[in-house]
Structures are given as C-alpha cells and as structure tokens.
Image 1 (cartoon, rainbow, N blue to C red):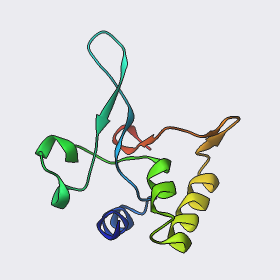
Image 2 (cartoon, rainbow, N blue to C red):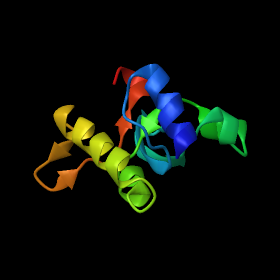
Image 3 (tube, rainbow, N blue to C red):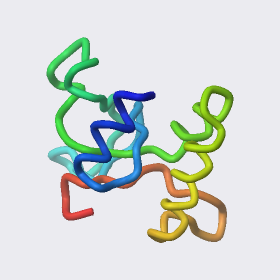
Image 4 (cartoon, rainbow, N blue to C red):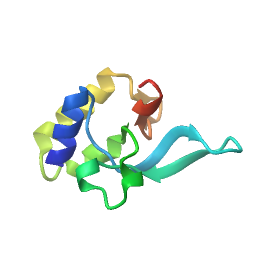
Length: 97
C-alpha cells in the first residue's frame, strides 16, 4: 500500500492498483480486465503497463490505513469517479485520465 501511495503521489493521482477493467479494447472492440501494479512490486513486467487505478483497492486498505484510504476515496469522489450506482470500476490514466 505504501508503494502505491508513493508511486501515485509522484503522478499526482489517487492510489490503488489491482486487477480491474481498463479503457483499452481488444482487437474486436471488447473492453478487458487485467492486472495492473507498481513496477517495483510487479511479478511480470506486463503488470506495470500504465496507471489504472481501482477504487476498491482503497476499500481493501481501510483496515490497514483508514485515514489515508478515506482521504483517497474522497479525492476520487471529487474527481468524479462516482455515479448513480457507486464508484466506477477504475480510472485509466493511460488514455488521458
């Protein structure tokens, strides 16, 4: 979690990477689901291909760091990451944020 916070702070975006949907469609136009992560922590280099942030990562981190997790979720709300049914699956910063 600390690595996520440090890595994303450098980009001035909310933190929290995991497996999630992303904005890049496959060759036939279907949107996908993929693992994303911090390069320093990635098992495979393909896991660190860009900044795709998942709000549920912050919900998982509440048990470890409630204050920073809630602050992160609030920053997501302020950025418009929430809709009629709750938080969006992810924010894909690889395609313009």
